[in-house]
Image (cartoon, rainbow over all chains, first blue to last red; front, side, top):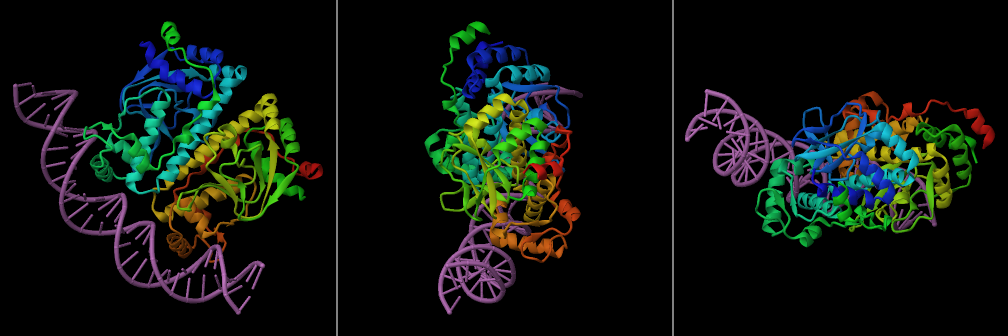
Length: 251
Length: 251
DNA sequence: CGTGCTGTTGAGGACGATCAATGACGGTGG
DNA sequence: CCACCGTCATTGATCGTCCTCAACAGCACG
């Protein structure tokens, strides 16, 4: 397994305020992960979870299937996100949603009992999980605001959020592995309209003409989106730095 | 102060899984509360919170003011809800939102330091707060789903949610203290369209003709809303019962 | 008795959905 | 190797939901 693949996850947990020594314990538990093919479910609606799933690498979406079969995406998940955090806390209330891998992902499964033990013994971990829950909530609120804006702003805002979340974990590549259908399901728009909206953004020189969505003018995109990324920032929570070389040696 | 006024809050915390003995400690901290006039802010955007605010009585909305002055409501808050839970955890990320009293409210302020102490010593309380965060997240996700449905379903779903949340804390009165403007800001609809939508629901004999919104056919409302309240249920988390008489004696 | 907020009604128009068809591409099996 | 298929991107045309603007009535308030 490539050592560097886990760096984004480490950065994420660090930014949530996990103490260095607690992070080691967590990292031990995520050493074994399985790969999930693009398109298949990481978390399946209605299934009891015996473990907690942490996304290590890839891109996933947290969604619910409506009665008519349409998929509504709540939000996307990036490396370091816990796929079923809410369900872990509220098993009864929260089993209707699923998580699907949009590209090939690697996912670590941590036993419930291990989590319970960790949370009980490592306060910084419990707090970090709580913060992660709150941060999900922030993201959902921003989506909720955004979803009643005009289509161009809606799409732009979604893309800004994904870019910002990727940058927060050290991923600088401005190509997003989203299909227009993914964007449509997340923005509450029809795929047809998303297509037209993306063409508008291309003509504004904000997106490239290439087929996986690629942002070429981040500044302007944020402007169109009225995007203020502060709601994503937990950066001041921890002040220790990451020794990437050490990670490479360890993994 | 009327002793019964605190019962809904007690029920709420109990349902979140707070152990009986920990609840007492929490109750002590909420004994002093201030009244907030209808229309004024309980939590003001941009202000650092030195304490955590718990809604004891009344009805509030968690909202954000857009640049053009419009108010977008994330969700409503009922007795037992913590007004600034997210901000408490993520002071940096989450100061753009406000909470406004929609009718006269009473709100308890608990010092940050007291909370920190409680959370550190009483695991059931920490877990309950975490669960409350997750439950907010569930509610936001449901709003997010719903906001792309047709207007009648949108409004119906919002009303169902409020009824269910009130019932969960023992409030059985089917009259909701919401103006049509409140509903509009929460549903992402114009007030004019909300008005017409409510008239549709009245003609369907689901709402009464009276001016504060009153639900007269809950069954049918839930049907129109495609409302499945399971996402709100944390009922199985605690199994101890409430001694209302004891509360009356204590307060 | 004005003033402001909420609720109500009417008319016109915009944004985005839906339906339908086509092209490009990759994967699969004959 | 090529025909076939499914998925995704694209384009055109029509239609419906909901917004906006405007005006007015009821009501509480000072």
